[in-house]
Length: 212
Ligand SMILES: [Fe+2]
Image (cartoon, rainbow, N blue to C red; front, side, top):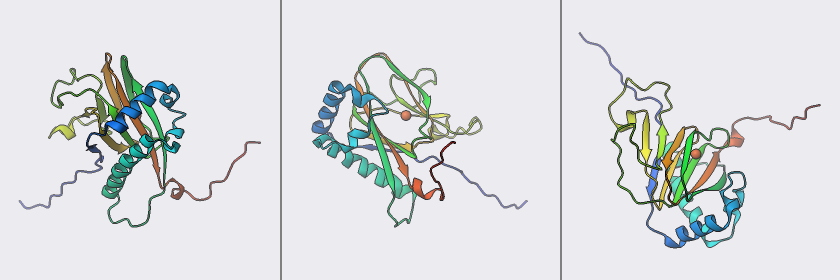
């Protein structure tokens, strides 16, 4: 019997993980700022982080630039027109027990870039029991409603684990749901950059609408 067969792995989710070389000047300054300026930890007042003139803000920005440029180059092959980006940065700092439930950033962003300024060094374990995940790890959830029929590897499970690690930067689409497993108490500083891409190109004709 002859037949024509096509296989498509459709709608992949692109995620990039960068492990930069150690930059104690950046990381120590970020942690010091997180400890001494609690307002930077509020996810609705982080705009100032990118606008600050501090040396650490410039160093942080340089890392975001590398990661975002690489991600956008991957996902927009052949694009020569510049990207129109807007960004919002806030600190996610914990020095006690913590847990982040499943969420996404679909409303406020197109891309999320998370930089870990400090996180405990641990062995990365990707194939342990579903019910025995390590503390404080970032879990990316499969966007498909039911992924039971495909079990070819780690990327085809219903989740993928990313271990926070000092100098690590993760970029993923804002639509991708994620969570952080509970941790019983250690210091972790994640600096999250929420980025919109070409939002102004999406629709024409929006005007201010006043309810009367
Ligand atoms: Fe998040």
